[in-house]
View 1 (tube, rainbow, N blue to C red):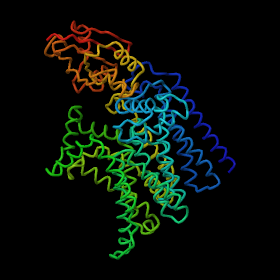
View 2: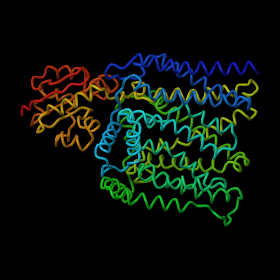
View 3: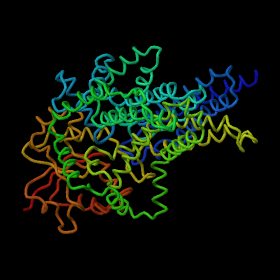
View 4: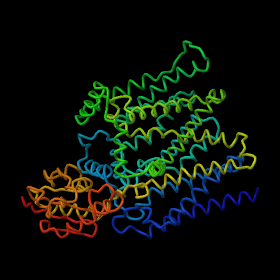
Amino acid sequence: MFGLNIIFKLICILCFMLSLFSILMAYFNPAHGYELSLYNSTPPIVWISLIFSIFGGISIIMYIVHRNQSDYYNYCFLGLLILLFDRIILLYIPYIRGYYSWRGDNISHFGILKEILTFGHIPSDLVYPITHILLSELVYITGLSNEIIANHSTALISVFYVISIYLLATSSLVTKKEQILAVTSIAGVFFSGYDVYLMPNGWSLLYLPIVLFFYFKSLTKKYSMKYAILFLITLILYPFFHPLSTVILILMLVVIGLMEFLIPIFENKKILLIKSSFPLTPILLETAIFFPWILSFQKFNLNIKMMYYSIIAGSSPNVISSMSSTVGKLSLTKLEFLRLLFRLMGQHFIFLIFFFLSFVLLLKYPNYRKNNKNLIILLSITLFIGLMYVFYLFNILPGLQAMGSDRLQAYLVIFTPIFAGFVLSYIITRKMIIHKFNLAPMVCVIIILIASVVSILNLYPSPYVMQPNPSITQMDMNGAEWLLNFKNSATNSVYIMSPVYRFLAGSLGHVEAGKLFGSSYKEANITDHFNYTISKNLGNSYTQNEYFMMTMFDKIVYETVWNVVGRFHHNDFKELEGDTSVDRLYSNGDTSVYYIHSLL
């Protein structure tokens, strides 16, 4: 036994050393400008060290749980600490290597945070202020910069999600083994970019497990009032967190109420008048807050009209056809498409298998159903979300597209770690063929490790999953600010995939950027191939002079990972440099600013 204690200590020390080594290697290999792939630009030893560290952490926990050695359960805690530490490192690698931030909505939320800190109030058109209020408070409390708080906060929310899965497991799973395995299954696995990017939708999604934990605990006799208060506070705040998550929460409560009624009927196998604990009050409260709030914003009028006309017409745009068209542009064979699908969603498939197996086990064994009512409720919620997603994909229920149902994929897997804990515990404890060779814990380790590695490899967009790295460099920000300071306010601008206003709104805030940038923030996409297939001069494509900012991202992405799309080729960029109607005003190596002289 003494030898086993030493082995556990050595493994824990080795795992922590590997994690620290990965940090040092990432730090001493900083990014130099835009990188098409974070994976190729980061030394391979960083990823290898972290994967081995994750393997060690999972192995310790599996071995102890398999042997049921309660004397060593402290090492389970150390194993989980290793996994959480590695999770944070994986999410912080871009910033350790000097990345500025990410494109799209991520940089826009920087600007909203800047506005709150500058003007001291929430912008009137902000639908989901909770995330930004929390961030602004952190800036005031810590004294750190906006960029540090905004960039580093989502990783902490991701870790909080893992912790909340454990809390939910304590109220949904019966044994300590199941609860430990549930959190172990997800600690080193990432489901989506919501773990990376600053997005209120992602934060509200990752917060859902703790909401259900509050609800389940509020129904117990012990501390019910305390958890009921926490649940009530959460309900009041959620409509201001994100609209889609609020709708999902309301639907989840409806499913819970229905299952509270159906479960006893199913077990008794006859219809009885059963006292149901339908959560009517929470549903009415959430609805009463949500709908007045959301209807006060005109931006959702289009969604409401789209949903109305879809329901009236009995149809919506065909999602599957749109996906097929996108895949067709990539010229993938069926085998290549399946490989890409597993690379993108392999961890989802593995955890959905856990969901399916949990469903089978609960149907097969009455004792499991008797002792796992909350697990059955979580299964029902996941099944309901899955059906909604299928209805959206195959246009079975018109109008779903108007509520952002393409994001339901992320909601579908949010509770699956609970099912993983249930199934993994079954594999470890039940007598099966693999137990004759003592392979049960190793099989469980391999399953979780595969899910972890697949998720790590698709955590950041890269050519591996046929996507470009969406990072923003400091040079991109410098180029946008230079254009702001020296441009003629009466002249508009065009772009490929890097609108100047997006960057400026991220650094200055939308209000200030609008004041300084003027009406020209209404940028337009530049013509494909710079119109060189028709004319030798880009100036022949415009009736007035235009500014044009091009980042390294714009150039590399169409020369490499999206070359098959055919929008721009390498020769197009060479011709641009020799175009007499285009002047290059500024360049910092990563970003260039051009002035297009109209020839019309």
